[in-house]
Image (tube, rainbow, N blue to C red; front, side, top):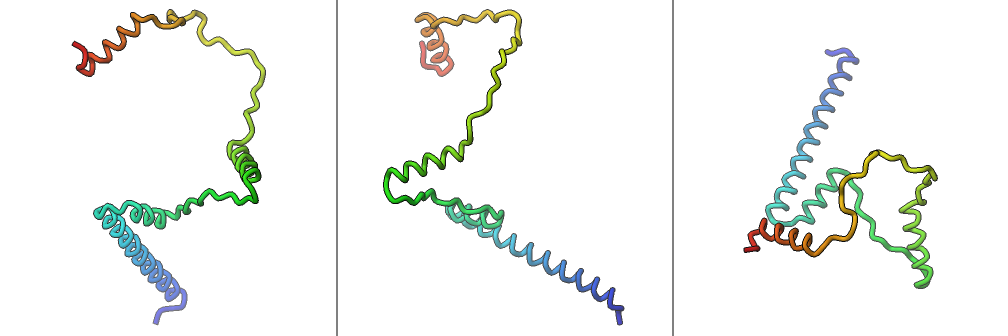
Length: 130
């Protein structure tokens, strides 16, 4: 007969093995469900199963309860203000120049010749211009 400590160790080992086997069987059954749903073009069911396995929470429907339209608008405004947070705290420091010399780039409006040239090159690359 095994001593008590060896019995406990063996029982823990058997329990862990049993748990791992059950977990593997469960995961395999879910994989089979996902494959079957995908094969049958049931993407909603496939994603539901993926979410169930991964433990992701269901998305809550956006329902804000209010007594009237004005209160509902006010609650939505508060919701988005809380969601987006406060404006960033920007320090009033002078900007630092990275480049000493200006790049040789035209900064004014483009000309009609430039537009026609770009359109022609674009159409040529698509095989549309003669």
